[in-house]
View 1 (cartoon, helix red, strand yellow):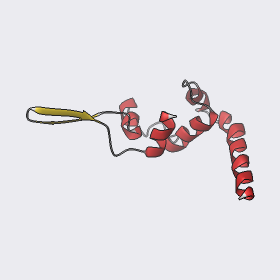
View 2 (cartoon, rainbow, N blue to C red):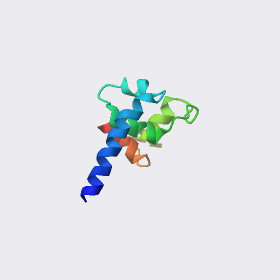
View 3 (cartoon, rainbow, N blue to C red):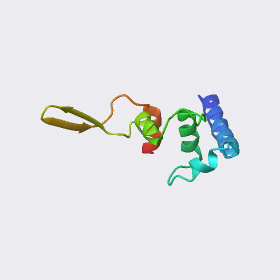
View 4 (cartoon, helix red, strand yellow):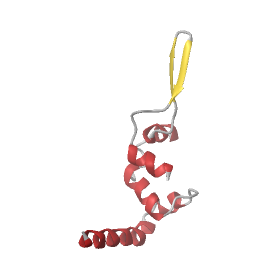
Length: 94
């Protein structure tokens, strides 16, 4: 168990040292409340391919932050998205 904790500390230290060297680190770290560890997690979840999402709405839907509107006849319901990337959603929540 102690060896696992040492490996975890070494990984966290490596992320703290290496993440600021990434070209997108400055953008991600400019988000309010997003430190080095959560920013690295967000980058790991969305990737660094800038053409992956056509626009911000696509990324918002992928993260589960976009509302879903279900309309049928006279009724309309706006609810939360069930299918989403839970790890990215949690990193955004932090």
